[in-house]
Length: 132
Image 1: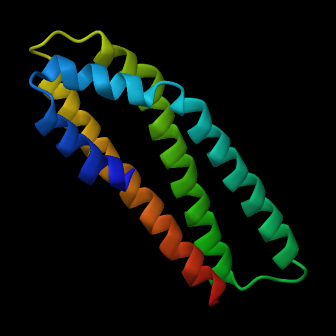
Image 2 (image 1 turned 90 degrees about the vertical axis):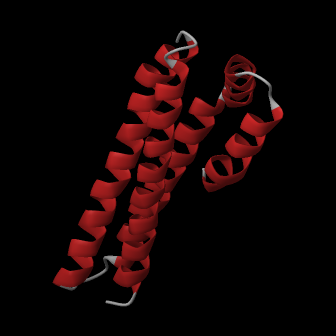
Image 3 (image 1 turned 180 degrees about the horizontal axis):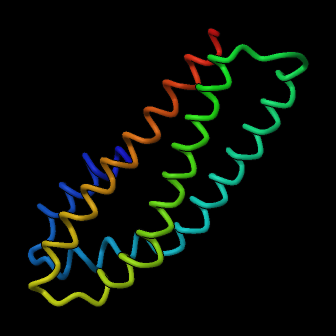
């Protein structure tokens, strides 16, 4: 996502002559990604539960439980935001008029930053919980 936000989209926007060409390119590159992302999220969830079960052989310190709970909440929020974007905003974006495209592009940039923040915070909590 970081690559898409900071490299792919700006470079593609500069390369294509019109907003419609850019949108067609982005739609083409994003086709089929939804299920790969959700599959990855499912794998992360399974490995997270497995890791928790392996480390929970005894009483976990309260700080570790708090970190793991917060990490889980951030993960669910990120997956929920991705699903909302994927099933609600993406179809609307693909059907948007030329005047609506800049607004959708702005929304998607904001969502990308929010997803990066959620995932980044989750990673920090994961590292922090391993030191508790």
